Image 1 (cartoon, rainbow, N blue to C red):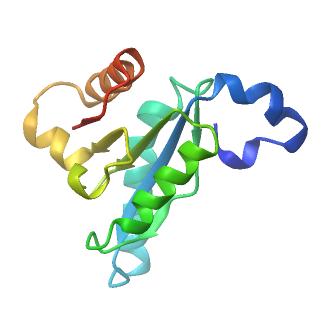
Image 2: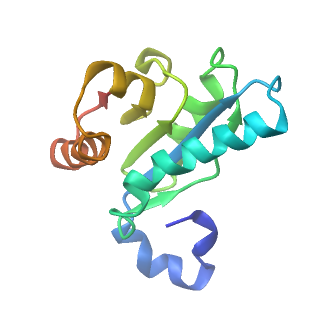
Length: 145
């Protein structure tokens, strides 16, 4: 479920069911042409579909970090901390194009970076991603893939 689909009157009763916040990370640099930026956003959308669709009743997708240059992760880490303080138990960051170091994002409970997943496994992407979400929910520990 997208953050914009939640209205103020229903959030109080829905909140107990949504314990996981998904933060998309595009990693644009500003050097992309409009066509390249569109392609990056489409890749991220398709990657996020692997969790947004099957876990719609438990996960809320927050606005994406579009620009980041993959250098300074402190703002993204702070947002992870803040959404936990706002009531989310878990924070998942997803990126279709960027590998994000867990050491720079200690407040994230799970980082799903498509390049890292594809480099490590020849298995079906959807199964791996959904399996990692289930592991997070079942163990409550921090993970990165």
